[in-house]
Image (cartoon, rainbow, N blue to C red; front, side, top):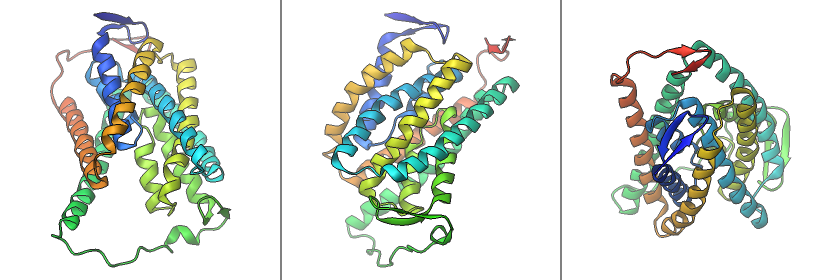
Amino acid sequence: MTIYLPIAELSVNIFIILGMGAAVGFLSGMFGVGGGFLITPLLIFYNIPPVVAVATGSNQVVASSVSGALSHFRRGSLDLKLGSILLAGGLAGATFGLWLFVLLRRLGQIDLIISLIYVILLGTVGSLMLWESVRAMRRAAGKLPPTTGKPRHHNWVQRLPLKLRFKKSKLYLSAIPVIGLGFFVGMLTPMGIGGGFILVPAMIYLLRVPTNVVVGTSLFQVIFVTAFTTIVQAATNYSVDIILAFLLMVAGVIGAQYGVRVGQKLRGEQLRALLGLLVLAVGLRLVVTLLVTPADVYSVVMEGVSR
């Protein structure tokens, strides 16, 4: 059964799209991360134009982030002050990223840049995550001695000026790295890269935010930055396909419910290892796409639209 996507300008199998949305929702629920870094490459693999995949895939991230942030807010594990400063930097970064997105699209290099960014980020994050999780599993099995060194809490971040007190996170921290981190993640959002899998480890290891506050605060920032990006993409680039977005959101919400149940049965290091393998697999698939000669060697560009 096929359905026509008016913005992507092609017909797709509705069951494959629903399957993608459900699979990403399942993985998001199981691993506790946003699906932005997964759904965009999957849509590109299915021949959805990268510009449409980037803008449309963000809708699924917004839907799942709202649900998660509300849950954390009710439990008191969301730092609104910290999240608001991250959001300020994120909106500025998203504005710059949208300008860069439009510039690269006019130059005809946006598809290549998006693929290269994904390859670099997915390869780096996936490798580090897999290495850390394997060491944790070996340590749990008694094959490695336990770590005895204490983490360094007084790094260069702690010495920066313009410090603020964040009561919920129990931190006395400069606003400069918080805004900078929000800006960087916001800048990547228009490229279709969900900031959760970058923002969460950066908040833990760089800003020393307690783990129980990180996820909810990260989701709070992701909601508004991704929603802002989606609205601007729809208004300026006309690249949000509402039919595709609706199918992905419905399937993703259903898949996430089952993913949460499966994730509760696995240990933390096992989940991180599986996620690391998944991230590396997606990055490897993108490398193959970049290296293999396409079936259509030439493309025609008419009024800024690739065909």
